[in-house]
Length: 110
Image (cartoon, rainbow, N blue to C red; front, side, top):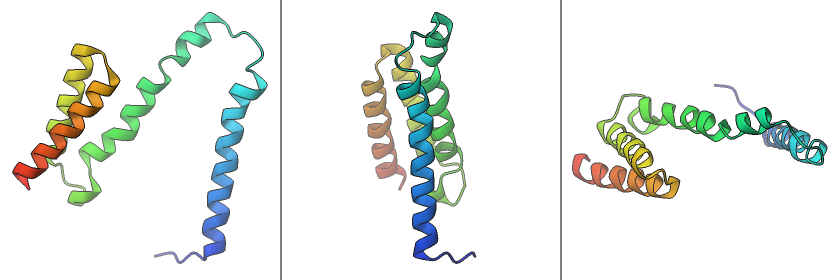
């Protein structure tokens, strides 16, 4: 295992923070004053739809809590989230349904 000093960890955190800021600033600060073409605005609407599953899928398929083994509770919660999201098209309802289902499944399955 690699041992990192506190200085290295803070350097990585600050570098990643500066990089994130510059990426966001490039769109909001530098290009925010200019009108973007409709096709760019349309494509930007799909960004959360593309990013969120990429962030959540590893947590559902290979959760660290089960040492990378598929967990029925997380799979059922993900399915409940998708179903509620598709039916009601309400992100908050989908999140609450997924969290509630995960809580109940973990209580019953252990």
